Amino acid sequence: MPHQPERIPLPLLFGAAAMVSLSVVGVGVSQLTDIGRQLEPEQHIVASAKVVFADESDGGVGVYEFESGQTITIFPPETGGFVRTAMRAVAHERKVSGGSADAPFEIARTEKGRLLLTDTVTGKTIGLEAFGDINAGDFAQLLGNEDGDA
Image 1 (tube, one colour):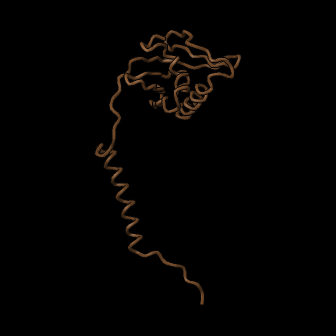
Image 2 (cartoon, rainbow, N blue to C red):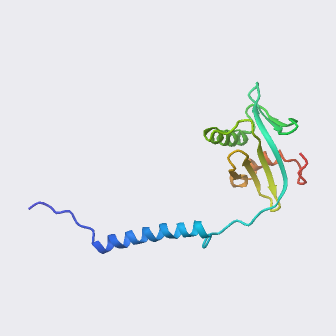
Image 3 (cartoon, one colour):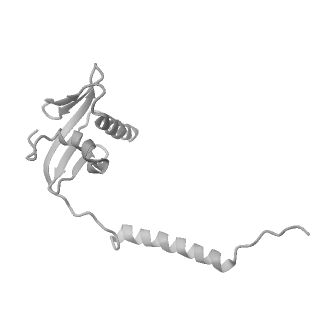
């Protein structure tokens, strides 16, 4: 006698379909109405700089103030690994979206000490502290002291 495959009970299938449907509806309602969402409170910027990054002929990465073109710093070859990696990833996303490579990035410090990197083309913001104090510190040095004087 051939072996018959076991069937999943019909009530179990209906229950699973109901759970998935309720989850999708719940997320949709939350997105449309902000009910049930935990929103991050608005954070005031206490220091910011609009900067551009450029590959140097010796393999370094230069960081320049956007409006004046003044050099903020140059990461020599084999240094600033996190800055290099982060900027290449953000620049790639900008390129894919068709944005200008010449537009600045904004680095900002909030009143609560968060360090943010915003692509002014795509509008995407990255919380740099999520990558650790040492990595975020490479970007923090581009802002200068706590008053924002670069």
